[in-house]
Image (cartoon, rainbow, N blue to C red):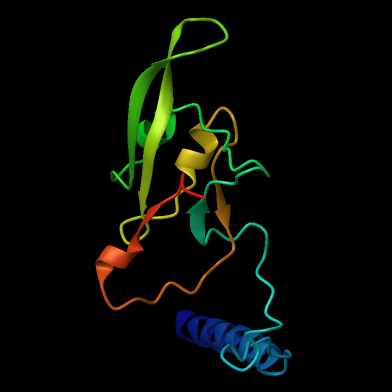
Length: 145
């Protein structure tokens, strides 16, 4: 009796698998023809392509050189160089950003640096073409205009 019960169970599970397979076989495909549709290709806003530092019309960014993004990066992709300067308005010393380096080749696109930034000075763009011949070209300085 258990042999026949197992046989019907096996046939039922096979029919369930075939139903899923046939449903997916007749579903319309959404394959992107990448090289041909490069001009019309639209990436989703949530896609993390590369880290950028937006600048305003005067060429200034919103970074206050706090270093939270560098501390939040799990694999050391971000390197910040700062210097202490005297604020002309208050006369107090404050940090100034000298160099903001980002290594795209070792980034794992975890978004922790963007979440850690208190002033929204960095964000991910939707650029996705990063093919280069040398890894040195993947190290980018973000604070220059």
